[in-house]
Image (cartoon, rainbow, N blue to C red; front, side, top):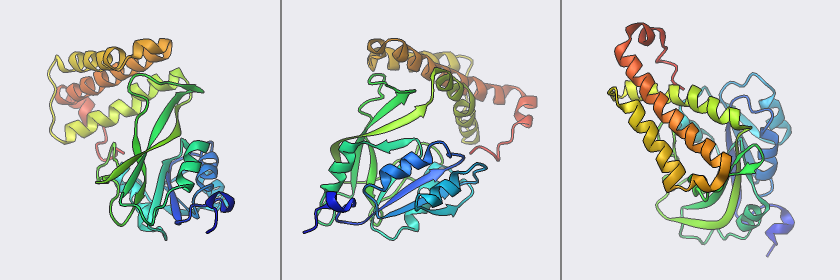
Length: 272
């Protein structure tokens, strides 16, 4: 039997899938890690204006052009076009560690009874791995049998709906925030805007107390119950950014309810 470590691919073929939008700075490293275990690479791009698609093609990926449908719907496009049964789905800012690569190469996917495998995720601010605030181990299913499961058909925060999941002793790296400034600008900007729009469209309503109560709850959960106080300035920053996000999404929801001028100026057809 061929040693998978020698071939560079798992014994059972795997398709690596990534969704992208203007990820020229990160897509090459992501695909390089996927190519260590995958025999096929697919990038589903939603209209990049930079060199994302050209870099992906040079890395050996097949690029599918698809206007953004929302998180779960978009992440199901690539698996639908895959040649292999097993799919390994990463975001462009995620990487397989050497530990994860060797673990995947050692799996017997033909014989397994599991339809999904979950990895621990190391979440970073810059080059700093934050181990508190619920940011680790942060298990997420990334390797799955596409004929038996897939991402939830939701437009935000989609996850693989596997019924029999095995948690692997292996980590992914997630470089979500380049620095502390980005941590706060994302929380106060597009994250809270999108959430407020989604809640409004779903008919959810806020009271005058909602922003304060949700912001306070988010801070206490991250800083106290998830022990952010043990992570120094980064732990405090994560807790404050979570509080900022929670406060603003309910404040913006309340604003949509109360201020017709603000509401009418917002394009609710462009949530995503």
